[in-house]
Image (cartoon, rainbow, N blue to C red; front, side):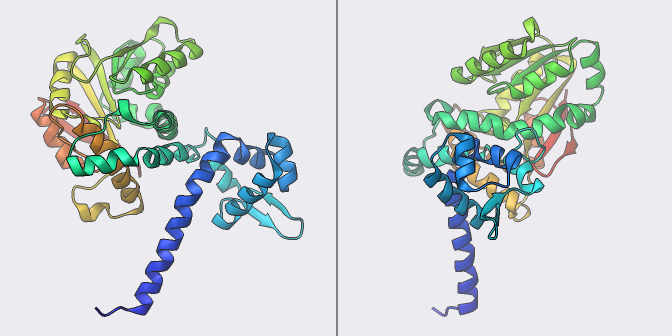
Length: 352
């Protein structure tokens, strides 16, 4: 076998970079959980003693963590002062949970993929699924926080207005179902924006519904928001004006059955909004940095979840618009269009 030394060196450089990123994911989790990024962004420049004192942590550990962050390019180091700081861009991505580019919560999701690796490796051999009820708890909170960024900055401002006539209904007073709502982030954002409407969140994972109910109480939204344990084919059919699936249809074992139930559950002039990971229709369209993240998540999270349910269609997180259009058609929703998009999501409108 002939080996091109230049190509080998380039590939090894890429691998070393990836190993460093993988190792640093655990340090991102530490920095997010202990408030190291947030404190450094707010109070820096700081040395390790100052950051440790401000966060109630051990200086020796903080010293090593800061060195790793500086080597990763996640924080800045000034040799003359021996102090660390964060650029505004770094702070937006790692220290500000309300910023439109916050990624600091991804450590929880990455941790869950490693913790659950034995289950996934076994599933590779058996072909069986691994349901959400068998996943590490950090996956649920990490997923909620990870998706919150996009929902907070796009859902009410861009995605709902891109749907035909939906905002007007919500302002007057509409009935909305959020299917696969998880911790209820999307449900609560809509409820806060449209006080005349009623919102119903459904998820088959009881722990997530309990978390959603706690969040609703904290938000003091009264009786306008309801969360109940149901899967996508058993929630009550009550003539909803809008039925939403946020980054979850591809996780379902029977997405066609889910949309058939949606057709029965919504009013004749109702709208189904599908928010799905951004993807092209061909593999070669998705060999990108974003596609890399989504294919990895699909392998470790989405596909196992679908295979654990009845039918087990296993669409995967990179299904693409054409495949989703076909799923909607088979579910009885024949009017279908791409309402809008972001670099991370497709927002699709399906109607009867």
